[in-house]
Image: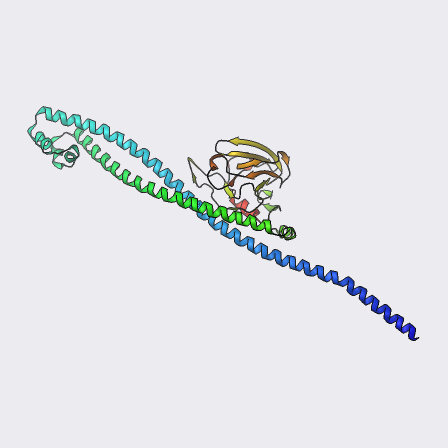
Length: 345
C-alpha cells in the first residue's frame, strides 16, 4: 500500500515536471512576442516622428522652390519688358531729337530759348513750358519719352530687388534641400539597423510599405518603397509650365514599384530623364519620371519594382525624387495627391 502511494507520488511529480517544462517555452515565447511588439511600436513611433520632420522639411523646400520659380518668372518677364522699353525709348528719343533739330533750324525765338537754356535732353524733358512750343504730335512723342524714361528707371530698380531676392532664395532652396535629403537618409539608415523580425511586424501593422490599400481608383500601392516624403505641389510654378504631378522625395536608388498591375514601358526624355509609362489594367496611365535606372518591364503585378529614384532630366542638381503622374483613361493628368495620401501607410 505504501509502495503504491509512493509510486503515485512519483508519477504526479513527474507529470508536473513535464508540464512545467512544456510551459516554460510557451511563456518565454509569449514574452518574446510581446517584447517584439513593444519594440515594433517604438520603432513605428520613431519612424512616424522622422516622417513628420521630413514632411515639414519638404513643405519648406517646396515653398522656397515655388517662390524662387515665381521670382525667376518675374525677373525674366521684367527683363524682357525692360529691353522693350529701352528700344522704344531709343526710338522715341531719335524722333524727338529730329523734331528739336527741325525747331532749331526753323529759327523760332521762343523755341531757341528753351533749347539754349537746357543743359541736356533730360533737362529739356523736365521743362514744362516746352509744351507750349511744340505741336500735338510732338507733345505725344515728348510724353512717350518721359513715360519710357520713368518706366525704365522703375523696372531697373525692381529688377535689382528681384535679382537680390533670387540670390537669397537660391541659398535657402539649397539649404532646405540638403536638410530634407539628410532627414530621408537618416530614416533609411535607421530602418537598415532595425531587426528583420521587427520590420515584418511593421509590415503587418501597415507601416513600412508594400501593402495594397483601397482608394477611389481601385487597388493602389504607394509607388515608392522606402523612406520618402511629399507634399501637394500639384500645379506649382515651374519653368514654362505648371507642375503636372507630385514629387516624392527619397534617396537615390530607392525602389519604385508598380502602383497597380499593368504593362511597363521604358523611355527617356529631355526633361523627364529616364521614365516609366505604366498602362494599368484599371485603364489608367501612370508616369514615373527622373529615374536613376530601370527594373522590370512588360506586364507586371502591383508591387513589382519597376525602377529606382534618381535625378535625371531637368531634376539634375536638385533633390532625388520620383515625379509621379496619374492620367485617368490615358487623358489629362489629375492631382495625384489625395490618392498618394490615402495609400501612404
